Length: 193
Image 1 (cartoon, helix red, strand yellow):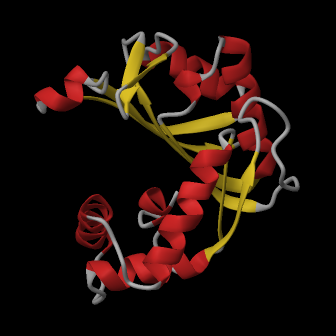
Image 2 (tube, one colour):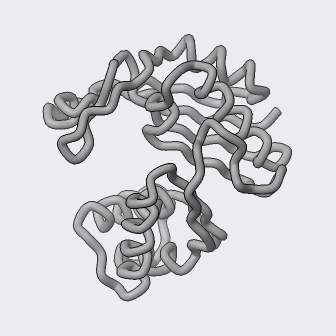
């Protein structure tokens, strides 16, 4: 959660949820460590990249500590069931490598509907999904994924009530990323219509 939080520019209240209790516990540990200035190399690299994109005078360490202090709450919840937040609560919903791991297209569409529900009018949906794959590997565990294409995603975004701003398909040049199932990615920017 904190990894992607560094890409939410400015002062924010950051919320997140995950179905796995262990992931929530790990995120709490990383947030507390970040608040104390203890940051792993991957998170520092992400923070440096975010500073390069958004600018600013903070060091990567300061950005991580600042974002860690902006985390308001983490919950255990299912992405494809009703989300544990009020309607029209957020300006931004980020989803990174999650929707394609849902069990079927109905769950995928329910998650998009929930994202739209919790966004304020004109709110932004930012997503990254693996494309043209049937699985990815994380921590040596294989996860089955839906076979997502740009055309499918474009149609589903519109059907869920979003206006698509940008959808880019990116191919990774990094062999280790390709071997893990992240060879082709779909980067999506949409707004609540």
